[in-house]
Image (cartoon, rainbow, N blue to C red; front, side, top):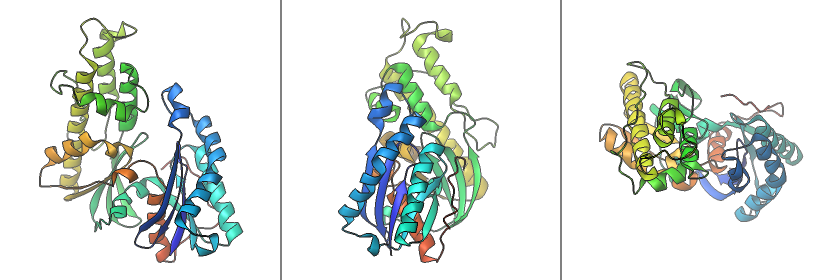
Length: 335
């Protein structure tokens, strides 16, 4: 079976053709980073307009690269939640139009569940139950997964998502956008023990996250108490040391929360997904902290950030079971 998949939940315009396996026949992603960089973050209206401008060409490119015609397809899949509502509407409306025009089944896919499917694109079979952890610019969530379509939310961020925290720290230090790669690069030459930053763990057994405190601590470390300086305060640590210390603190919190969740749910396998998992220091840091007691599975680097291949991989599972949606499918901003 072959599926054309569409992803427009945020600022990546993506389309892919996936066949049973799953095997990626094509995977095309148009990044909007240049358009959002002047604002230091994603501007929803700009994202929506860019999807309108680029999606048709991206879909055509995906079909061309896969050497497939609409008559070769078995379904059209689309990420319909969660995300920026304007961006979602572009993808969902396009997918519905194509499914109707080509007389194909329509399959709606949950964006976060698809991130946890990314490991399958490397041929990694992960039998449930396992802990699913999504780390991205908009999400920091942990789920107990007992099978396809059977998951239970365990905890998530109460304020900033982890990727958002990276972006804001980068903005404070003037490192540019997107913040994740910028902070990771600066941290490579920094001393992770140079700056004392808080580890917010909340209550004893809490599985929720909070990154606003560490973001504020970085701000005061760089600009002085109560941010009295517009830029770097006299005597402030080097940005490389701040970045290294920031990452160390964040990884400590992530590892502890994952350890708590595995202990509470009696799990020993963790499948991670989302754009922040592209951070090499995070992969190494979690492996060092969690040791051999917990098996960690990461997506291939090319499928860590938003892409349509993961949408197609999850859609294939539904299609192979004879499941699909109707043309009444609607975009939903919330999980």
